[in-house]
Length: 242
Image 1 (cartoon, helix red, strand yellow):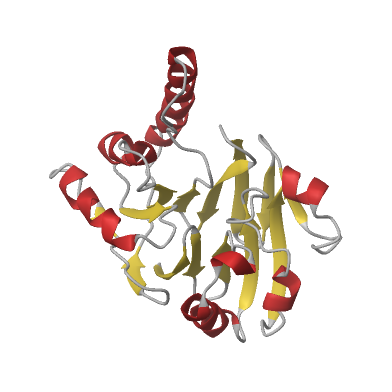
Image 2 (cartoon, rainbow, N blue to C red):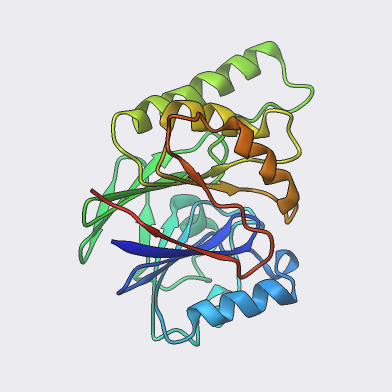
């Protein structure tokens, strides 16, 4: 199965199947410059869109999302429970709500949610044998000033998700590689342990030049491909699945 992934900004990406477009974590207008707006509208116009929101932080959730999606041929929503609670007036009543342990089925896709160690959830999407992971703000957050106990707790939680992911073949993984942190929010650990077919770095705040250091973090024998986007609208096409 062939997919096309397009970078919009920060943690916002479009993943296009032949029959549907997945829009991940479209942020508020303060995080969408003119280039990102143009790339977003180009992808959305005339498409059958499923908008997924991992949590309610403004860099991951656009309160004006229904206006953004007006050019779409069709729009549906899968939102984390905190989005549903805090922004119920911003999303349609029929939106699917993602909660840990709950799986929704939409046509030939299954959509599962896992608890995050920040806010909201991470997503597992399965379609025609392909497995796609979108981490939202689930990451190994090693902020300066954290207590040793908080560091251990964060590392243990992150390792738990890595162990879950290692139990299956992940074809596409969107996971954090935050350039503000020395450990890139766990990107190196993720690449070493999960070894996805394709790795898409999240949470760049537009500092896309920083993600190039990940090239040296990929185990040579893993075969993992890295999406080295630079500007809004950059795309990559890949064949994924069994």
